[in-house]
Image (tube, rainbow, N blue to C red):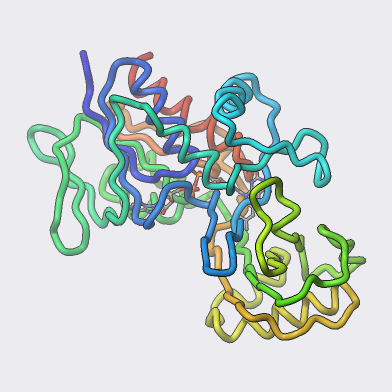
Length: 316
Ligand SMILES: Cc1cc2nc3c(=O)[nH]c(=O)nc-3n(C[C@H](O)[C@H](O)[C@H](O)COP(=O)(O)OP(=O)(O)OC[C@H]3O[C@@H](n4cnc5c(N)ncnc54)[C@H](O)[C@@H]3O)c2cc1C
C-alpha cells in the first residue's frame, strides 16, 4: 500500500527519511520552518560572500552514507577537505548542498519551507499538521519528526509514553561568529587556538574549497560548548564583540574591526547524550522520530537515523 507521509525537518535526517520512503514507493511531503533546506548544515549568503556557520564537515564511515556521498560526488557538490581531517567532506559551494542536492530529481518528494509545525492533530483520515495561525497540511497516513529532541517532544507530547524518552536526550549549544574583514588576516586558514578552551574552531571560508574566493576575508568562529552554554541566553548583537575578542585572544594577533559581523546561536548544536537507539516509533507505527539525538552528534548518524526510521515505518 502506498503511504502519504509527512516529514518534519529538511535537515540530513529528514532528507534520508524522505528518500528512503520515496524509494519504497511512498509519497512524501517535507516541511521545514527555515527559509531553506539543510538544517544545521547551513550556509548563509551575504553581500560579502558565503559562510558555513553550522556543521563544519562530515565524516564518512557507514556504507549507506558513503553510497549517498558517492552520488553527491557524481553531482559535483562535494569537496574533500583533508586539511581538517583525513577524508572529511564538505558541501560545494556550501554545506547545505549536502542536503539540498539530495532532494533534486526526487519525483515523490515535495518540500515546503517556511512552515513551522505547531501542532500535529489526529483526524479520522490520518494526521494534520498546523502552524500557529491555523494554516494546515494533510491528512497524512504517517508522520516522521526530525526536529531536535526538545522540539520533537513538544510536538509529540499528546501521543503517548514512547516519546517521553525524548527528554533523556541532551544537546550542547554553540555560539558562532561570522565576520568579514577588508584585508586578509595574517593567520593560518584553520589557526591553532592553543589551549584556549573557550573556542572550538575558527576557519577561513575561502579555504573551504573552490568557488569561495571573494573580495573580503571571511571567517567563522565557533565557541566551545562550555563557553556557549554559559552565554546562551545573551543576545546575538551583544555576543559579537565578545566573540571577536575570543578570536583575537585565540589566534594571538590583532584582529581589526570587521566590515560585517553577525552572531548565531545554535541552541541545539551537538548532541551530548543521545538516546542510543536509531529511532522511536509509536506502537501503531504511525508516528516516528529520527535525528542526531538518536545516535549521536554527527551528520552521518543523523542520516542513518532518518533512513532506519523510514525503513521501519514504511515496512521496507
Ligand atoms: C555549530 C555546529 C557545528 C557542527 N559541527 C559538526 C561537524 O563538524 N561534523 C558533524 O558531523 N556534525 C556537526 N554538527 C552536527 C550536525 O550538524 C548535526 O548532527 C546534523 O546536521 C543533524 O541533522 P538533523 O537532520 O538531525 O537535524 P537538523 O539539521 O537540526 O534538522 C532539523 C530541521 O527541523 C526543522 N524544524 C524544527 N522544528 C520544526 C517545526 N516545528 N516545524 C518545521 N520544521 C522544524 C529545523 O528548521 C531543521 O531544519 C554541528 C552542528 C552545529 C550546530
